[in-house]
Amino acid sequence: MPAAHSGVREPRVREDGAWQLRDSVALRPEPFGALAYDFVTRKLSFLKTPTLVEVVRRLATSATVAEAMTDAGVDGTEWAAYLAALDNLAHGGLIQERAA
Amino acid sequence: MTLTPTRPVTQRPTTGPLVEQFEYGLDAPICLTWELTYACNLACVHCLSSSGRRDPRELSTDECKALIDEFERMQIFYVNIGGGEPTVRPDFWELLDYAVDHHVGVKFSTNGFRITPERAAKLAATDYVDVQISLDGATADVNDPVRGAGTYDAAMKALGNLQAAGMKDFKISVVCTRHNISQLDEFKAIADRFGAQLRLTRLRPSGRGADVWEELHPLPEQQRELYDWLLANGEKVLTGDSFFHLSAYGEALPGLNLCGAGRVVCLVDPVGDVYACPFAIHEQFLAGNVRDTGGFDTVWKHSELFADLRNPQTGGACTTCSSYDSCRGGCMAAKFFTGLPLDGPDPECVKGNAEGSLAAVDPGSLPGTSQDHSHTGTVRNAPVPLTLSPTRAGRPASACDESPLAPARGTGTPGWG
Image 1 (tube, one colour):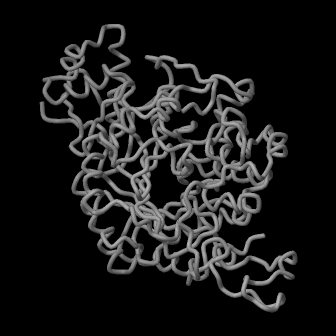
Image 2 (cartoon, rainbow over the protein chains, first blue to last red):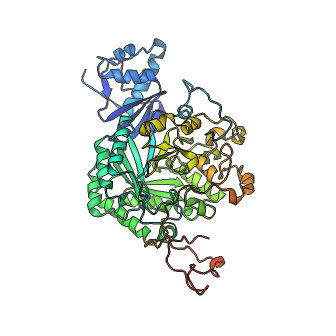
Image 3 (cartoon, helix red, strand yellow):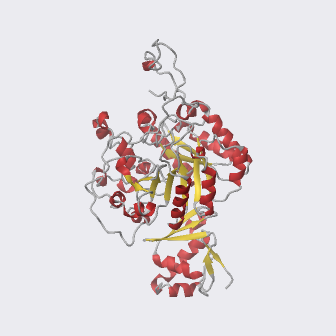
C-alpha cells in the first residue's frame, strides 16, 4: 500500500459521513484496544486504543462520524488524529460507507 | 515455575508500541497452533513434534469439537492445524468443516499425500480454509533426504492438484536449512509457477530437530544471505515472523519482532496439552491441558507458566546489547534445546554472542525431548541419506546384520551423520 506512506492519499472519511464496520470483520476486545479480523481477506489489524474501538462500534448506529466520535468521548485535541485513524481503517477495508 | 529469575512482576503499560503491549499477553492468542495427531505417514528428520505414531490419549472427535466451540467463544479467528500429518485423522475433514461453520478459520499444514484432485476441489470451494504444503528442497535431491523418499514428487502433485482446482493463495512452506538456502530463488519460482505463496520458516532444534540441528542449521554466512533475500522480497514472502533474530543485522524484517510464546502464541498438542509455542513441546513449557477444569480458556488466562512469560525480560546478557531492541534475545525454544540460558543470546545470534556459551554446553546436559512418538519400525517414505558418510561405512547397517559391510537397508533411521 504505497499510498499509505506517501501522505498524498485522498481522505475518504469525513466527519459528516456515515460508516460502519464491514460485515465480514469481527472485533475482539483486548487490553490495548482490539484485534480486527476480516474473515474474507483473512487480514488481521489492530485498533490501538479503547476509544478508537468505541468509535468504531458506534459508527453503525450514529448518524455521522462526528456523532460517533463525540459520543465515544474523543476530545477536541484528538479529533484530527481519530479522523485519520478512521481513514486508515477505511483504506484498509475494515469499515465501509453506508447510506446516511 | 519461574523460567528466569530476572523477571520482576511489572504492570502493563497503557500506551506505547504494540510490541510492548504484546509482551504482557492478550486475552486470547492471535496465533494458535493445534497439532491434531502425532500420527504421520512420514518420518522427517527434523520433525518438531517427534511425530510418527498416534497417541492413544488423542482428543476424540467430540472433544475436538468442544475445543473449537471454545475457540469461537474466545474469538480466536483462525488456527494453524498441523501434526503429525493432520489428514490421517479419519475425522479431519469433518473437524475442518466444523471449525469453518463456527467462525474459526483454518490453515493446515500437510505433506500433500492426501490432497487428491477431488479433495483439492472441495478445499477450493471452502472459504476460511488455507492449505500449506511442506517442501524442504526446491529439488528432490535436497528435499527427500530430509522429508523422505518420494515426498518431493508427492508435494508437486498436491500443488498441481490445488492449482488445477482453482485454489488461490495456498502456501508452500519451507524450513530453511544449510542445504536449501541457496535455492531461495528456485522456491520462489516454484511458488510462482503454481500460483502459490512462499512461506519460509526457521529450523528449530526441537523434537527430532535437535538430532540434526548441528548438521542442518544455516551457517553464519547463509543467515546473512537469507536476511538479504528476505529484505529484498519483503512482505510477498511469509515467514511466520520466525526470523526476528536476524533483525539484529540492521533493518527489521516485516512482522512482529518478538517471541510470542505464551503471550500471543501457543500450541495445543494431540492429547490436549497446552505448550507455550509450537517449538517448545517439552514439560518445562507445559501450561496445562484443555481437559482440565476451566478448559483452554483457563489455561491461557491463568497458568503460572504463561503469567511468568508475560513478565517481560529485564535482565540477562542480551539487554546490554545494542541490537536488543531489534531481536529481543531471539527464540526461547532454540535457546532451551541447545542448552543455553533463556535470558542470554539465541544460538544463532548474528553477532556471534552465543558462540562462547554454546562451546561450553555439555552435550550430555541437553534437555532432550519429554515425549517421542517417532516411528520405531520401517516407514515406506523414509528419509534417504544425502551421502553415505565414510564414518558410517564400517558400522553394521542394523543391529541384526551379520556382515558389517552389508549395504544399508531402507529403515526409518535418518541418514544424517
